[in-house]
Amino acid sequence: MNLSAETEEKVMFDDIASMLRTFEEKRENLMPILQEIQEKYRYLAPPALEMVAKRLGLSSCDVYGVATFYNQFRFNPPGKHQIKVCLGTACHVRGGDIILENFERKLEIQAGQTTPDREFSIDRVACVGCCALAPVAIVDDTVYGHMAPSKVEGVILGFEIEKERKEREKQDSESQE
Amino acid sequence: MVTLIVDNKEIETQEGSTLLQACLDNGIYIPNLCYLSGIEDPPGSCRLCFVEIEGYDQPRTSCRVRVQQGMVVRTNTEHVRRLQKTAFELLLSTHHVDCRNCPANKKCELQRIAKFLHFGLKLKRLEPLERDIEVEHEHPFLEYIPTRCVLCGKCVFVCRKRNGQPMLSFAKRGFDTVISFFGEKDKAVDVCKECYACAEICPVGALLVKDSPNIPNP
Ligand code: SF4
Ligand code: SF4
Ligand code: FES
Ligand code: FES
View 1: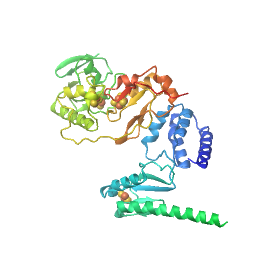
View 2: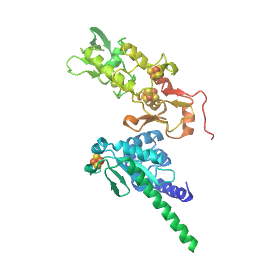
View 3: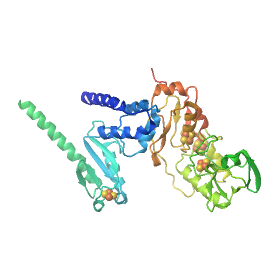
View 4: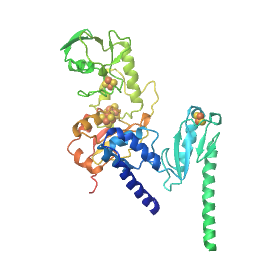
């Protein structure tokens, strides 16, 4: 993790701490709190779960159990590029799980996780409303229909080339200065 | 006291008792995995404790039924056995059966149930569907083996009862459900080293006390 990510986390935890003070110590506040953290930071960091537990007088594993039950929560910061693979019925029967597996293998992470460089994260989603294009993956704001393993390679490769190009441009402009 | 008839035998039991408990107290065994005496609201999740009760057209899970005066119950009908065998086979289909190398060998509840139902521990109809799950949160003293866990929930229940706040809990859901030790390690060190109630209650070999604990440095 680089320094800026670390300071970012510290700011997040401070912010969560002051947010927690506005809630009463009642078990029924658990879901609203988790949702608020998820909404604001897009993920529930493990130390945040422990803070929530402490505030509500629950055990951490109890909070973890509730949080991991629901699909709406993730436990890793979302990547710069968010890959969502549809596993709704139509996509499922057309091999959506194979597409997911391909992304997972290519990026060496599981659904719900983020690559260590925080470039990519993978999530599974239910029907995204374009079943005719099944199997579907959504990467950032682009919908990819009729996905196939070869396209998975292509999508990732595209981002990698793009990243390299930007880095080269940056270096070039720096060397010109 | 309440009197009821189970398998043509009259038995007596305390009012408010569950049917399963009444039978077990009277020496009538009904396969069960997720029931614990003293549990106020039995989860009824293992689907093994079925019986037929006169007046009901479907078999019922006996852990979820309270006794009633004059109840007529049969624990060994063909219908009941079929349900039990199917539930049992489903449990086994995700269970890594390797009794010879398992510390629970000979004390294991699955072995007992298999014997009782005259049902081998080998799968006949179903494909094995092993859960390939890694343990995310290590415990200093306890070892959890997800491929042996039948998710009965007994460990969570006894821990909550003993320590007020459970040190372990169910996590995730569906096929990925596991028992998790997420949380403060130092608290676990203090509480667990005096307890081990969870490892004692586990009906299979899924929660073990480690031979060499690795206590985190303070
Ligand atoms: S838990 Fe029971 S059935 Fe499973 S391997 Fe151990 S002894 Fe065998
Ligand atoms: S670890 Fe043992 S007691 Fe706990 S849920 Fe699994 S099988 Fe049941
Ligand atoms: S099921 Fe994937 S878009 Fe509808
Ligand atoms: S003991 Fe009744 S369902 Fe498990």
